[in-house]
Image (cartoon, rainbow, N blue to C red):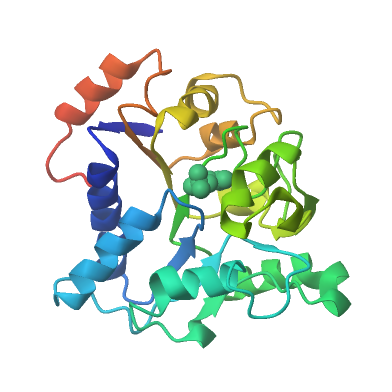
Length: 261
Ligand code: PGA
């Protein structure tokens, strides 16, 4: 695991955008794993800015897979993750909707939705780079504490803490769906490169538990410790709980210039 401490959210966004662009430049048919939530938005805005300025790679051949989706929203709801990712990233990058995949929350197919999504991911050849955020309770995608470390895409129930955190998108806690479809922790571990982004003081405890705590289903993001290629990009506030901060700084400062993330 490589932990990169950066001054602020803007620097996190720049380095994350560099890394995603490098993946697409090296493999124009790359499969991008996309997270929703607030944390990746500056990264997505940076990618869009560069694309509009003619600086980024071509996204003509990429395919995208979202991590999760709410269950129970009317089709096309603006807070559905399908609509969110289209609005915040893939439409502005010119990636057509048929190249953007997400778990299917339609009521009649819920029992098989997880398995069908796993098949889609496998058929696409797996995810090349997976953008991840982290919940204040250590959740990864919508894998709440207690989720099996080997889990696959399935229906889950959100914790009260997560519904409270997401109420800002819906106007009230009551309007936040209780159920979601989410990639499992085992699904996420199959991606070739994991890029965890965390900014702000509210994430400091979760980041410390995920990076330096014990491997435990009580902190689902600690499963990252099992993956061979994880980059954790944190601002100073989100890094505040890390005991080995100085070591991470030293490692990054001495990183060979030929070695990307
Ligand atoms: P946030 O959400 O980026 O909006 O903080 C992260 C998460 O809940 O996984």
